[in-house]
Every structure is written in structure tokens, then in C-alpha cells.
Length: 396
Image (tube, rainbow, N blue to C red):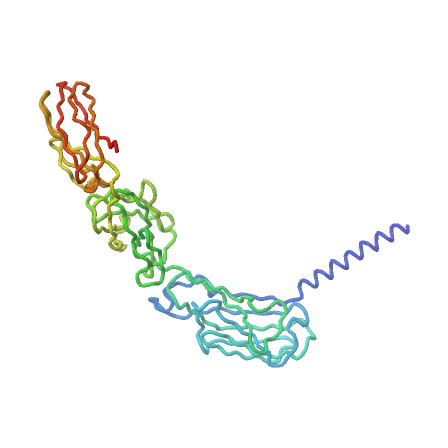
């Protein structure tokens, strides 16, 4: 029987401890946070097409235990946006109170700070409630990358409120993009900068002729914010008539990163541009990149020109025409050139070139050094009525 009483005592003690721990964890105010400052259209920002303040909603601070609002006369609560991208409507807002111990409260609102002055006469009950209403907020930028909070900050005569320390937030502030109206193309060297005049920073870096590169296309609003959820099909064109470009592709959630085989290859030396066009909706504004400088890659390969072929730098094959038929046993001249990745001649090369043929009976010339990036060879094919090839190799 004595053993049973000890067990009961242990159980009772554990219960009392648990109760006290639970009670202690609740000894702080509850904060009801409004949602009116979330997902505000950028159209309502300063500089937007419908610039206006937005009602935040009511912030309610309620006691859960007597003394959550510490007693004090003329104490203050200061609230401010956590970043400089947001402002309050000065002079607009109100504060009300209820309960046994709060006896006075007033509010002052400037564009950057809310000050609530209040008095608590004692800590007799757990029924005090402070309600801040009518605050209105506005973003100072049309970029959606401005998420912030309205939070408590330090100041003179700060009131002590359990669970409501400095940096505690009372509302989230955020923006969402406006409607999809245009496209944005970003080349290497450029970075999206929503809310700016051009929508980007940086300049396109030089591209090497004949070398594929990546780029990005975004669906954006009037302020260059990416608009998610867009799946329109996009076409890419270029001022370089010799460019190799990706086929039409759909955006994924408002963007497309053109990489790998879907990249672009510019081939003509000088300045070129890329243009993105919405082929699903002709009402959306196309976007053309700034001019990008296309430069030579330097000497990377050889080009063999047969009679009937003409060099065409910047084209996919580097030449036009087809080899003309040759008479067996009759010499003809071929030209070998040092070229870059896009078939432009490199006239500084002096490498030695070796010429070979799959006609084992042909008369092949000796190896020859290039002069100003070019060498000519006299060749005599012997075997008639068959297709034969010549191969130029750099033996330097």
C-alpha cells in the first residue's frame, strides 16, 4: 500500500511540473498579423501605372497572461519597414485598446515610422488588447525583389511586452508582377534588373564566330519583372543571316534558358543582334538584344578549296559551289587556307601542310609551308570514273 502512495506522489508531481511548464510557455502576447501587405501588384508601387497605398489590415496584440504588458506610463512601440524599399502613408492610422490595465494609447505615423504611445496602470488581469489599424503601405520600386516586413524597432521609452521584442515582425510586405506584356532576352554579360529602365545591367560580352553560346528569354511585365506561369512558344531570329539558331521552344514558368544544342551560333564578324518573338501571341512585344561584337576564334582548322568551290566565310560550310569534274592524268590546282571556327581566313599562319588522296595512283605534291595563311598545290589524279577525295593536314 505504501508503494502505491509513492507511485501516486510521483505521478502527481510530474503532472504539476508539466502544468507549470505549459503555463510558462504561454506567458507572452499573441500577435495577429494582417495579410494586406502581401502580394501587392507592382502597378501600385511608386512609378507604377496605378500608384497607390495599400491597406495593411489590423495588427492585434493581445495578452495571454497578466503582466504581458509591463506597467508603465507613456511607453512606446516603434514599427518600421525592414528595408528602405517601402514607405507608410504619413498621418494615416489609428490605435485602440481594451482591457483592465491599458488606460491610454495614441499613434503617430510618418513615411518611415509608426509610434504608438501607451500607458499601462498595472498587471491585474490578462485581458489587455492593443489594436493598430488603418496603416497603409507602398513600395518605392517596381521590382518584385523587395520582400520586407513591418517590424518593431528600438527607440526611446520602449515599452516592455512579453513576446514582442525588437525585430519582431507584425506584417509581411511583398509585391507580385503585373501582367505579361513583353519578352526579355539576356545575352552573356547581361543580368536581369527588374524595376529599372532597361530591365538589365551589364553589356553583352564578345562572342566568338562559329562558337555556340547560351542565352535566356523571360516573359516580363511592363517593369521587366518575370511573370511566372507563362508557357508561350518563342522564336529566335538574328541580324546575322548566317547564324545557327534554336528551333521554336516553349517557355517554362515564364523563362527559357537556351543551353547546349539550343544555344545560338553567330558566324559573321562584326556586330550582330538576337531577337525573341512570341509566336503564340503576336500581341506581346518582341525584344532585341543590344549589339554583340563577334570576333574571330583564331586559327583552328584548315579549309580545302577544289576547282568549282569558292570561299564563303561566315557560312555554315565556309564555301559555295561544288567540285568540278577533273580529267584523269591532267594536273589541277587546289588551295588550302588556315581559317577560324567560322571559316574566316587567318593570314598569319605559316604551318606546313601535307596533302593526301584516296587515289593510290595519284601524283601528290610535296609538303608546303603556308604563306600568309594559304598554300596552293598542283595535283594529278590518275584513276578515272571514280569519286576521289583530297585531305589537307597540318604537319607543323
